[in-house]
Length: 387
Image (cartoon, rainbow, N blue to C red; front, side, top):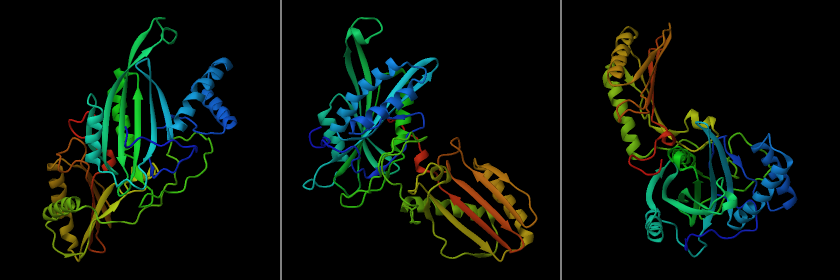
């Protein structure tokens, strides 16, 4: 592209205003401009990828990757990784890169819709669409690319044409003049659906960490260690303070809470000002993610008649079970929790939600916790060519 082409850089660790995660199966390519360190890191990578290989194979691999790393450094690539999978006995591979495109101080903030229009105009044979990720909207360009291979690079010994599938995700940093470019490429078109879904999951873990106005978080030094789950080279932020959810999500939480209250039909004193708030779900927290991905609504009824509790909870259990929820109840003398979850097969209005109801008999109190679905676990938009 002309307007959003990445600038050349002479540093191996450019400031990067987002974090993201890739599956453990990916091998990270060291992007280091110190040749001596780079060669040593590439040798470790060669042994990791080909543990049964010979010194000759490892040497050839290092020589091949040296040029690739040089090209990526010039292009301003901040992360590069690849996976090698065994799918039904066949070797399959794909690579992922991440770059930061900075328009400079004279360029205004990037509009995703305008960006998609420009991509479509510049690549009329590509599929371009806008998708909504957990971190915001992104423009996606999908392009099959034909590559002619010389005879010495093919198994047949004859020149061949190879189709490489490419997905480029352009994520404009909200309120800034920068765009994060994530690209996936694979020559294994039979596994295209697998890789497009995998790539959607990767970009759906994007979290913005850069400071408003174009600044970015400080970048720690690269230690060359192989991590079980690669993270882009920035500091992971602390867990954000709870914030109000969007108006649309707040309405949904109140709607569900109202239905739960109706089903209980329990007399007592309602807690005042129980407002929904955003959270990071347990699964995302375990992955090291800190930005909000879900919302929670806690409320309680106090001064209730303990004798009326069993019947009220029974009514609620029947309501949930009849509505497509999976209900699990536990027995106890003073605290009796009830859990309910709506899986992917549940009706769309409740899919992904969970409910926790706890009776405190001695305190004459019932507490309810309603949690919305994690936005990062959502599938690609229906009908999308991406994912």
